[in-house]
Each structure stands twice: as structure tokens, then as C-alpha cells.
Length: 312
Image (cartoon, rainbow, N blue to C red):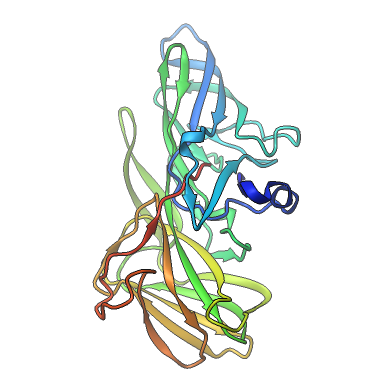
């Protein structure tokens, strides 16, 4: 999938292949292309899409400028038919040409990552820690291609928003378990609503249960309020009527409980929500408020929302 690079550290970031860092919120990518039509209007045998990431969609966040790039192996799909994969020679570019073969009829529904389903997005039950970014397996987006000047364009929409936890201390963490305190689903297969022109913007489905964020063999925090480790978790963009809780586990199984959005919050798909810094303390339960909104006790203070350009 695509990678996100810091313009000040582009070479190092490309070498390390940090995936889609600080994204969240997949604001859109532009797909342009041409087609070879059948006899029937609106039906093609092959669709060529050039996926472009325009400069106007690059945002500034967290005092750094980020650029979103395609990565080797990325695939999109149109109406359940997979495209070719991004080659090594195209990796690291912001515009890559995809070809989708097969009998395709309008509307042309585009999904990233590519899937054989025409309107189903699947998020994993376990996300894995990625330094300064989030797990690309949760970077799902969708859009509908429309024809203009003999080319097809699709502006993709992110399915998820991002929560950024900021933790410090001396513990070695093994995982975070995130639970919805309402009926909202955090992972599983989601069916996107459709209409005669493409996607309607609604969705149903998902799986009830706990979303796990894994640190693999462990992540050791740094001590001091100015030494936060940032952790980015992608969850569906929707209203969380009763809020969420995050159980942060250290290596011996003891955990700290963080509760947030207790009176409801709507997570936008164009946002990274930066939560206030916390020092890990096993056995403690604390309310979390968004960065910059730390005084309200109800958990309903206005969140600091960092809008960034994110593409799939």
C-alpha cells in the first residue's frame, strides 16, 4: 500500500518504507484513465486508471509536511476485479497507472486495497504497530469513477479515521485492546451502501468484539512528559454514541484503562484525533480528552482534529 513520507526525511523514510504515516483520514486520490469500449455504452473490456496524488491534497500536520506515495504491490479493484500491482519501478511515486481487465459496466466502483468484492471493505481484528504511522491493513478507501473528457476520475474516500495515543513511562507494552462501549463495530467485513451512481456513503456490518493493537515482541516507552511514543490506530469513521475504552497492557499482563468520548463523538474520515499525553501506570483508569481540550470532565470537549491528505 501507499507510504507516507516526511519531505525533510524523504530518503530515510523511503528506505524504511513507513506505511501511510499520520494519515488518517483518507481525504482522496484522483484516478484518471482511458478505456476500450464494447459495443454497449458504459461497458468496457479494459480500464486504465492513472492514480495521482496532487500537491493540493498534501497537508501540513504535527509541524511536518507529508507526501503520500504508492508502494510496491499496491492494488485497486473496480467492481470486484483486481488491477495489476504497483511495480518496484513505480514505488515511491505519487502517480501510478493501473490496468483492470474484464467485462466492466458502469457505475465503476473503486476500492483500495483491491478485493474481489464489489462493495465490501474488510478491516483486520488485529492491527500491528508501525512507527510514526498506522497499519496499512486498515487503510481502506472507496470511490466511484466517472467519465469526463474521455477519461475516468474517481475521488476516493477513507473508510477510517485515526486515533493517536501519546504514552510515556518505563513500561514495555505488548498490546492495546479497544472496545466500543456502544454497538459500533471496529473491525470485520463492512458492506458499503450503493445506489445507481456508485456508493451512497453508508455502510452496515462489521464484527462485534475487541480490536487488538499488537506491539509484537514489545514496545518500551520512554520516560518523561516530552518523550511520548505516538501510537496510531485506524477505526471506522462513524459516531461512537457511548464512547470507547482502551486497555493498555504491559508485559506482565497488568493494564491501564483509558476511556474517551463518553458522551458521544463523531469520528470523521479526514481526521487524526490527537489524544492528550499519559504516563503509563498499571491499574489506573483515566479519562482521555483530545489534545488541546483537557479541562472538560465530561469527555465532550471539542477535539483537536488534524486534517491530512491520505490516499489509497
